[in-house]
Structure formats: C-alpha cells, structure tokens
Length: 431
Image 1 (cartoon, one colour):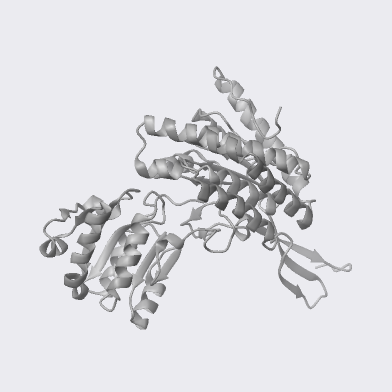
Image 2 (tube, one colour):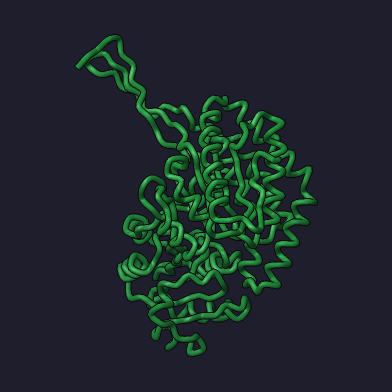
C-alpha cells in the first residue's frame, strides 16, 4: 500500500473512519520526529525528486484533472470555481517551478533569531524549529497539494492533507507522484499523507486530533473555514473571506487605476485576492466612473453601486447593505463614491476582511496614511491586490493566507511554518 494514502471504503463506518484518521495522526507524529533529523541538503534532494516525478507523470495528472473539471461542469460549478479547479499547462509548470523554488530557498529550521549571554554566564539562544504536524483542508485548487507538501517537507513538518471532492482525482494523482519521487530520495514514511475519502466526517475527525496535530490551515470558502473553526480542538490559521478593496484617490492616475482595477477584478475573479469593492473619491468619480462602466461592458462585470455612483452612471445596479461585505468570487463588483481618504479608510476597516486592500494615488501623504491606517494583512500603493500570494512574494509557494494576527499574517511560507524554542547552555549555574 502506498504509505502516503489511506484507502477509501465506500461502506466505511464512523468507527473505522475514526480509527483510520487517528492512525494517520500517530504516523504523522512519528514522521515529524524523523523529519527533524534531515539535513537541508537531504530535504532539498527530496523536493527536487518530487518535482522530477511530477513532470514524469504530467500526462496522467492532467488527465485526472480533466476528469475532475468535467465532473465540476456537470455538477454546475460556476465558471470561477471551474477556473480554480483547472490545472492548465501554465499552472502545472508553475506548480513544478514552485517545488524547485522552495528547494532553492534558505531553510529556516535551526536559524538563530537571537543569542544572549546573561551576567551569570548562561547562554540563551532563540532558534526556529518546526511546528510539528500540520493539517491542511482545502477546496478546488489541486496545486495546493504540492504546495503544502513541499513547504512542510522543507520546514521538517509532517502534513496531513484533505482536499475537496471536486479535485479528488487530481489530488490523488499529484500525491502519488510526490510519494514516488520523495521515497526515492529518502522521505520518511507518512511524512505526507492524503485523506482520499470525501466523507465530511473525516474533517471533524482530523481537526480533533489535538494529541497529534499542532495546527490546522483551512483553504476554501467561508462556510468550510467556519465549519473547521467550530469543530477544531487545535489552533486554526485562517481567513474567512477575501473582501478586498481598491480605492481610487483624488490624486490617482486614472489610466493606472483602470488598468489595476481590470487586473484585480478580472484576471482570476475566483481567488481570495481579487477585489470585490471599488471606492472612488468624489473628485475623481465623474472622470473615472464612465471609464469603469466601459470596462464593465467589455469584461461582462456586473456593477452594484451606491446612489452617488448611480447618479453618474444610472445603468449601474443598486447595491444593498449586504453587498458591501459580500465576497462574490465572480465578475461582480460593488462600487461606491466617498468624500475623503479618511472615509475610504473607515469604510475598508468596517466592511473589509483584513486581507488585501489598495490605493491608487500620486499623493505620497495619502499613500502613507493608507498604508498606516488600513488594518489588513497586505496593503498596496499603485499595485494590484492579486500580488498577495506566496509565489509572488518570493516564498516559492504558500500554505494559505492568514488574516489572523497570531501567529502568522498574510501569505504563509516557510518562516510561518516554524515556531521557536529557547536553547540554554550553562556551566553549572544555579538560581
């Protein structure tokens, strides 16, 4: 049996599922202790072997993904969700490239954060260490399987993966490739495990393994994340939704603003870092909103706007109060006119999800205020929110994006998958 997989039994009882998930937890805990002994060179060799095997099995993986996509369309998934599910050639290449990029990055494990010698002569060092066992629960995007596995291996963490039913074939095919490549290069047994059952009870069992799993990272829709938080007995790193804003300031370059708005909304509307709201200063509204209306027609964006914006463009649909806090993950955009920078900041902090928000302005003081006062994990000046991504931030890949403030915030890469310990060395000192 493939050591990375648990076989699914269609008639699996709750007791059998409980026992199998618990067994996975025990195995992951043992693997996490074996991973601590791996050198950086060995871990990098494992990752390179994984990347090689992904390429070797490219046709099989993409065939499995095509079957998932076909089922998703037949089940009525939205175009945006089908897009998230689809492993195009470019995304496959990016997935493999991400594995190799992580291998090339510095290893944070063992890195000294600081060192102090106390007056009594004891030496105290604060050093980075693995979290231990990470559980990641995700939907749709099959590349997350590879991203999560390689980031955990690089940081000497064991990982238990549970993907969504819509990507089950893709996830299995990717995991099998990672298993074969990693085993050749010395990956400890059960360091990466995938739960292939689509039974939702598996999630509840997984997030209650408090004696085996150290942290849970859910990636997906708000309902999934809230369900995980409600059931978990383990710390959860999360963001509930990505209600990202673009604010067009009075001093904005309107050509730049339109270009960034199109990218941030339309490039991949089904991602958490796509904008859902656009605010425009009243001094720029008369010039900017007609151009936004032309973009909306050209890119088939549904605009839901406040009264001030609809006075300028009556064709815009009306926005409800619920629209200001909604995450659409689709080509829908809520638009509002604000009287000042402060009003924009207040609106974002009230209605946003503390994920990613941007200002377009040539006014340095306005930019600085926005950067300082908007309470989000990533805040941008004159750039698209679509850059909130581990790969774009130079992390190689990411485990997810956190809007929490403890212990990680924003894209979670290698450093965010570590904690620290104090190493204290003495020569017989007593207190």
